[in-house]
Length: 468
Image 1 (cartoon, rainbow, N blue to C red):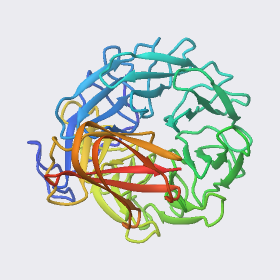
Image 2 (tube, helix red, strand yellow):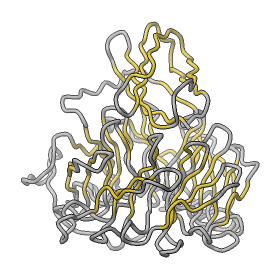
Image 3 (cartoon, rainbow, N blue to C red):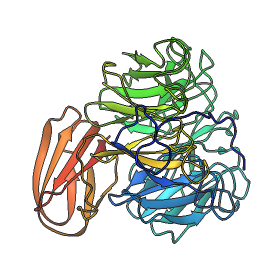
Image 4 (spheres, one colour):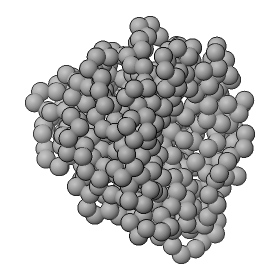
């Protein structure tokens, strides 16, 4: 497979025995893995974490050069290819994985019985791979984004297929039964290239085409497929061609578009779930020339409770995109990293994830092993020392609507659990002994929260939870 339309540029690197230059690189940034083609290449999705390992997929590489599933420790050690796709079992996964606490679930864009893509599940050790569902065309084809899980059903979108050929919104049970087309896209937008988010009892998503401006929409519908509507029609000035996902803080939805805005290099925006209160927070390249602050974002935003973080596929000082942060009110935009050097990596096409200390992501190209892409991390707080013996636990389901279960890998003697909202305010405090804790929603409103767990020897683990 050949890579097309890559931007070749130069950026500095920090501690990897390559070429040292002077630029805006930071000691907070580190590459933790360079793909080499066989162990994966040109990742375009996002990572997920179980507290010890990061899991992800690449659309190429592996035994058959049809993509693979991998896991790696957050310090960059113990990289393992879990499964190589082989056409019948899928090929070209462009999205990300989702976990129910027992299995990882995902989709491939091609492969399967009809070569129109499929849904699969696999255990975190790489065993028990199972093809759950083959797309047929009428029920969708070519899924581009990722699945989400509400504890009962998996929900997703396809890029094309369906009644009008513009994609579908669907749901399916984790055992592969109960598949239902909830919405045939076309009239309220089409050609989605991202994933859904569940907030306030509705599913929200973005389409990259359709709508009154023919450059995409924001849609919403109930999980049973009813009450579907267009929340926003993009029209160029307010953004165009969104590729990523929305996120919710319980009040606003936040997202990015790949095009549109005052410079046509993309935007960051927020909007109320009912479609009111739309605000364009930032137009990429406010200087109006070379995309110095980044351009063409194709991923999603992530929050640490104070800032929104994201990345772009292009622009910046060296052409390979940027890593940035911005306040939810649109102020204090700050460029953190300029990507671009073939060794250092560039073009972040997926989204970032946040574990309370570090941001993790993948670049589409670059690395020391032949320009196949990288996995990187960025420390939000200087002076962080990683501890790989920290408390390990799984939160499932997450997001959750009424309650979720925190399952520790071993018995806990005396730990402190705090839940903070996005403004840093403490919502709950729990002293806990045992292995399994059921966390009730209680009075927590829908939105993003941060779970902070401290053990007896002061190891602190932070994890994001989402209340629907």
